[in-house]
Length: 125
Image (cartoon, rainbow, N blue to C red; front, top):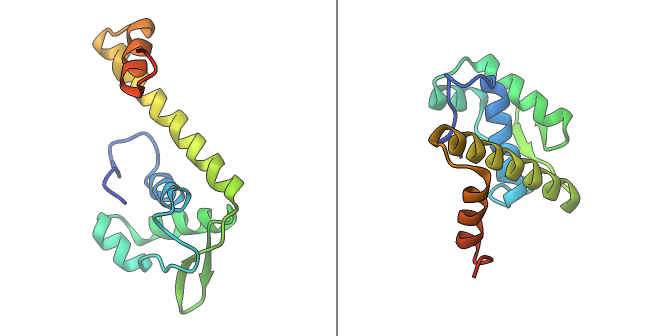
């Protein structure tokens, strides 16, 4: 789940962590009631300051994705289908922006990129 945490990214680490958890919830990889790693455990795994993980968990709590239970840990909350769909759409848009940036770096124009996408999706036949 945390394979794409990049300390060199301009996106703060806590946002990257929170984003990966939101996507995991939206994709059904994390389900209601499931415990997240403890702050200390996740901080050690990712080699980040525990305060970074706390900030990510608090952001997720404010967005309604998790609940923090004093002394018990952090758990995934029930998330509506609309909220999951919205998160998947936001993540898809991010993937498209990354793809477009990489295509531009390689000199691939929009028409060629669209044709390649159509071929891969099976719509360009």
